[in-house]
Structure formats: structure tokens, C-alpha cells
Length: 243
Image 1: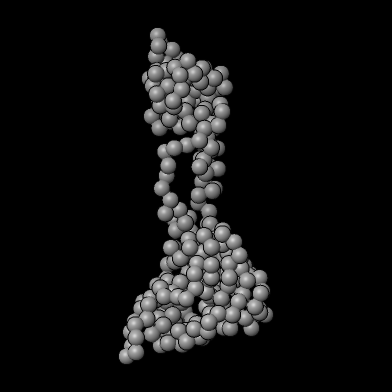
Image 2: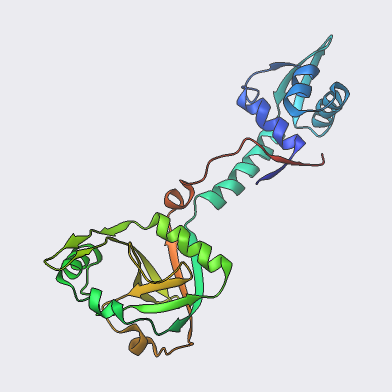
């Protein structure tokens, strides 16, 4: 939750109503109601903003005509640029865990033609017949895995053969230890709980990276701002720091 001072919140309110280019008719009851303060506090706030050179104010009776100054606009521009830097840069999601030997089912499923052909088309490689299994070490890593699962942008469709039906698989591209490309897979049907990450690649990752049971690995995925933030809903409830 973004922590704004009451001064900044009032400046945003004024800017939204056109006070950057025009004098805005405003009264202390309006400010008081909007920001949950007393009318006396609202009056003092306008006086403070004027003294700090953030607004120009002309008082007629109980009504103020307020226009933002260049300094006031610059204050909001600084805030905007700070937020822009946060919300427009890619977001890196990191998971940490230790390699362990699984049940051995990955080699079977990664050899099925129904999966292999789709992975060639959607991932761009023939998967090594097996998965690298990683037991995640923290609540943060588990939550990040669930977030990646929700936002996985590759889907391998389920299929059936003469023996049985096979579930779909979601997937997302990741890096292991900041350098080795791999794909984290999220099978619709799995024997593992949310504390386990399953990874596939064109090669045997254990051999290529020199991993064994207990090896610590770092898995990361970089998401576009649009992909990361689209699940968040803006809140109108802001925390105000003392003015």
C-alpha cells in the first residue's frame, strides 16, 4: 500500500480537478469531507500548501480559488516518476530449493508422443525424458511458485490414447542459477504438493549443472509489468503519513 502524505494526496485531488491549469473553487468543508479531517485542519492544510509554494490561493469569503504552482506540479511529477520506475520495469520472481529424487514418473511422461510433439511446437525443443525436482525452502518460494503457475503462459493440452487420459500441463520459461534456461511445468495431475517445482529442459539438468540430491538451486522468471500487475486491483484506501 503506497504511503502518501496528506499534502501529496491533496495535490493529487486538486490536479485531478484541473488545478494545474485553472483556478479551482474549493471550500474547507469539501476538503474536510474528502480527507476525513476537521474544517480547521483543512483550512490549515491549504495555508501550509500555500506557504510551501505548492499552490496559489485567493480567498473570497469562505471560498478559496486554488491553482497549483510549478513547484506543486513538480512535486507530483517526482511522485509519478518514482511510481513509473516501479511499475514499468520487469518483475523478477525467485524461488530457492534443493534438488531431490522424485518418483521417476517424469521420464515416462516426458517420453509420451502426445506431450513431446506439443513441447517441440510450444517450447522449441525435445524435452529430456525426465524432470528436475526441487523442494522449495520457504513460504515465499512456494507462494512465488503458485503465482507463476497462475500466470504460466504456455499450455500443453491433455490427450488420450488406447490406455488412458492424460492431463494438460501449464508451463513458463525460467532460468536456473541465473544462467541455464529451463521450463517450469505445472501438470494438471501430479503426485507432488505445492512445495515442489518440476523443471524440464533439452538436456539432463543434473549432469549439465553438476547437481545431485541436496544441491541448492535458484530458479527465476522475469515477467513483464503487464503480466505481473494485471492480477492486482487498485485500492482507493491509502495510508497517509503525518503531514
